[in-house]
Length: 371
Image (cartoon, rainbow, N blue to C red; front, side, top):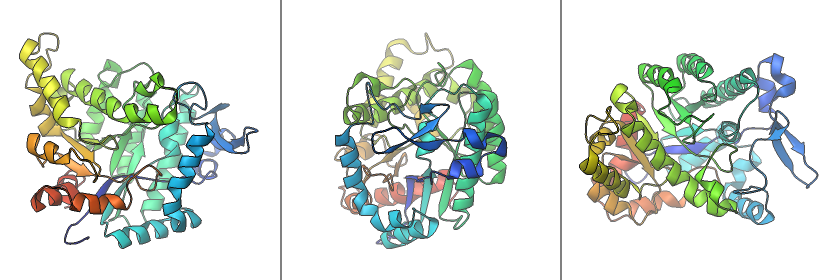
């Protein structure tokens, strides 16, 4: 608890040890597991199937010296945790210092893995199982505080269903999906119908989170630096994902789904609901027969969107959309996140104490069953 507020940070990350993949993967794939490779540039790059897991050149690259300098500078605030390899004890110490009651924890390298095509479906499935088993073991150090988000191999829907069932039974708190089109499929593609049905039945939140420089299609592809690509990719991909789930009937067909958008900010939300409402007023469900209610009704029944504490637009989001649909994130321990300044920034926002309480804890606690 911090200054009278309970806090759940709905977007935090693992920093996976490079050797974890080979250690935890099915032994049949140990020699194919993701691993760092010296590319002759003085730094290692994570590789799998003979390819870097992120795009290192071209549009939206991660290979510039300027970007690496920014990353190194941004990581300095995590020096004590980094020195301990971001182990559970260092994470829990940081949480205790800032008064954080719970974190929802996503992969870092794992998120990048889900942003590339795979030739071997079973290898990708094995990678997801390896990460999920390792992260669940990590979070077992404090299961009331550390909530693990499970990777699903959405490139191959049958394997995604299998892994969702397996890891849910073992104790995953939620499921992590990228918003990008995967294997040419938007979220409403018919081949994903069984995935949504299973996720609805399992009853755990589906957390949608982009990751930088993917091989999959991304709005960031239009830009020629990582920074400019990152500016547009995360919110634009989130907006399209939300629209797809609403307008193409995924939420209509699966009303029990709980969708949480993280690391995309929340300032776009009033505009995006407005934009969808304008089109409902114009054409209703003329092209979208599964849209049986107004878009905002679907949003309010099924979605949360995470904000940063420092968003100057947050009071407008609270006023125009409502304080029941917003949660809080810092992106710990990524260099571009708001840890720890985001906590104080939200406390100082020009919104009511009740709204802060809902954003810091109540809304997410309800969806993640923390109450």
